Image (cartoon, rainbow, N blue to C red; front, top):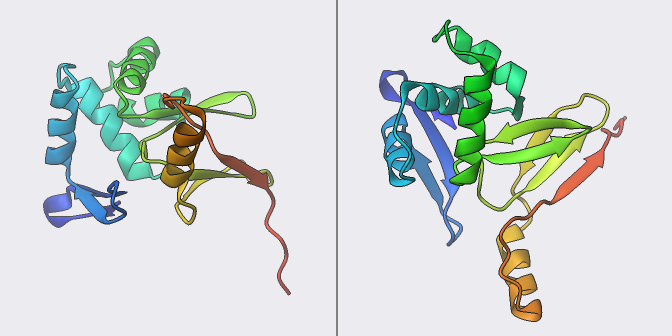
Length: 158
């Protein structure tokens, strides 16, 4: 994700063929409308916060950041909105160290969980989509959800 012209957020995602796709806020609005959910200001602002932050934020963190633009938004509205966005596959929900976090990257990837800092980072250097296809082909399972995480600490390289 980068900041594009006119301050618009541009999200870079990988297509199923492996090429990069760029999504603007306008594209995001179209994606939201495709889900059948109403494109409310609350939904749009929550998605924009998650895109701009480039972090896997918790419910409280999302609420804190969205409240700056929508001061009257309640924690329960943010929670319900996040849940609905997960249900339509615009967000992924992760449970890391007992805390739920939200990821706008719904494409197959590995999550790196840094135990020393608590940060979560997307890693696309492994073809998780191919792994999913292999599981489906070899088992007959239609994968509905997936989760690939590596937990570790940074090594000192001196």
